[in-house]
Image 1 (tube, rainbow, N blue to C red):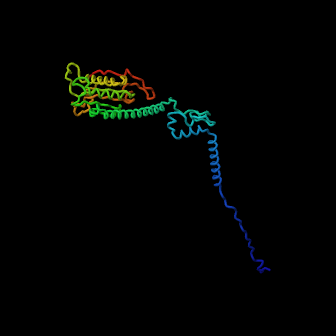
Image 2 (cartoon, rainbow, N blue to C red):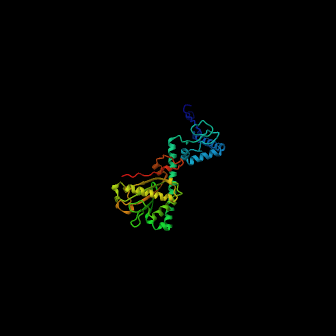
Image 3 (cartoon, helix red, strand yellow):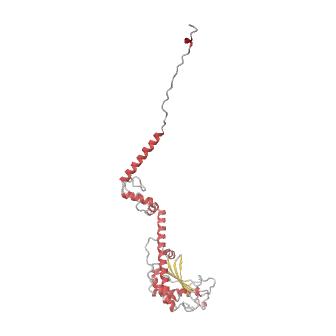
Length: 312
């Protein structure tokens, strides 16, 4: 029938959509790759440690402990060993170990090595001269002869070495006026110092000084220059008589009044003095012009003793 409600009722179809799995992405792959790489590096490290000799390990340890020393001074290091691995050094294709640079052919390395040797020699010199200064100071204080003249003996450390100055005193001159004749107590002082210098390896410089008072017989050509030279040479004879070898002297010179101790009072008795300088190696090489490096042996230089010429 046209009016039947059952025929006019619409048909409704319900469709249910089922959800799928969520997308995880590829982040886990990156994490897994990192883990595998770390494990490979770990096992490679274990293999290297197991296959490397103790000598190679020691070389590596020494290099990272003091790389500058191995690089400049040479010797055993990371590449100075025998191993199944390449030896390192300049040629990485070699299987046996190579020595690090330091054969002396590199001028920069040679300069660093020379400077290091100079520093070591200077350090030893400073220690030896300090010990000598202490010895002479104790000698002065413990000696009945020298204690009386302690105010006239001065010890100083200069860039050239240990300087021992014996200065004149108005009441106790070291020499007769205008003469190079040594006074008896000055002879005692010089001989005690000469005995103390007997076992010292360093060279000695000996200088004579006067005050600025003009020499009375200057018109005859003899001046304070000649007088200071003669007094320095007279002091040398006393030092040698005490047992100091004559070839230990590197220089004997008279300086007259060119280097006053008391510049404010050029006529002061303290300007009349004898200076004995126990020189450092560096000062010795500078004075004698030997050009030796610290590594070279020290040769006896008996001909180095020079007799100074008096000059105005």
